[in-house]
Amino acid sequence: MKMIIRWFSGGDDSVTLKQIRQIPGVSGVATMISDIPVGEVWPLERLKALRSEIQEVGLELEVIESVNIHEDIKKGLPSRDRYIDNYCATIRNLSEVGIKCLCYNFMPVMDWARSNLAYLLQDGSAAMAYDHDIVSNMNPALIAKEMLSNSKGYTLPGWEPDRLKLMSADIEFYQSMSSDQYFENLKVFLDAVIPVAERYDVKMAIHPDDPPFSLYGLPKLINNAENIHKFLKLNSSPYNGLTFCTGSLGADIHNDIPAMAKEFASQGRIHFAHLRNIKHSQEKVFTESAHLSTCGDLDMYEVVKALHHNGFDEYIRPDHGRMIWDEQARPGYGLYDRALGANYLLGLWEAIDKNYGGQI
Image 1 (cartoon, rainbow, N blue to C red):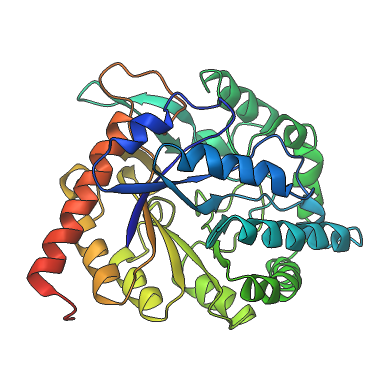
Image 2: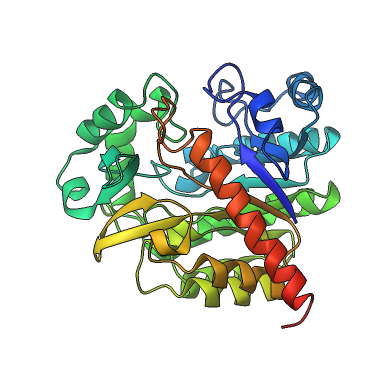
């Protein structure tokens, strides 16, 4: 298992590589190049420069998060073929610089949504929060404005300006698309991309829908065990796998997160794990919390044990953190709370490993 941290390149991060290098047990970063238009090929020279920048401070670059998928692919338009070809070319270039895992998502229109990016918690820290009624009653333009105005000047992946211009029209487009058709569009993408991923040894790890609830009538794919089963059957290759995000899946109180971790890790289909905790006040109202089990609704010990005992040996990162100790950073991606989370998770892993070894 390798513990890594998400880092945003190109000066778009308050956290430096030097600071990440000083977090005990963290071996590398998951990153992306944000200024390449969606659907275009990631140039090899840009990737080589990015790798060199990271390796110069003693960190590894083995995970990319993420190469966004052009909306035409999700819509199933005839123009998707060109964008799929470009995606395959990007995978080839990623393999050239040693990338082993590609985290991506197939969520229509928007990658994620929150009603508040800086909700004040009782201990004085701030965290991202979600209230389904608030978000559902906000039109797309308003929620985009709220998200961007509270981003503290940093980009918000999934809320890029070029996507926002088309948001309302795209949402309208999907109103006439069934969930089955959307799964079929995903299958077309997988059947083209997975053979390339196999050839170049890059594991594809789809991220769950965030939040996992139906929003604005948009299709939901990766939000519960039933749909994950359906997704994995679309392409049986072991390179077709998951980013197991406990925060996204755990937002639905009906999902049994340790059981899902056990099942999909035992199948060898979890290639990347995003581990964080959340606290519900109502079924569809929650705040993100500190990583400790006692701080949220999820038993992180049981989640980590399920991964450990069922053969997971790939990448983990502490997911979104709170803003603590007066830090000013991109929402969810400060240094301090994620560093605490990384070491809490490493402590759980070490204790489980020493007490149980490989026993189930």
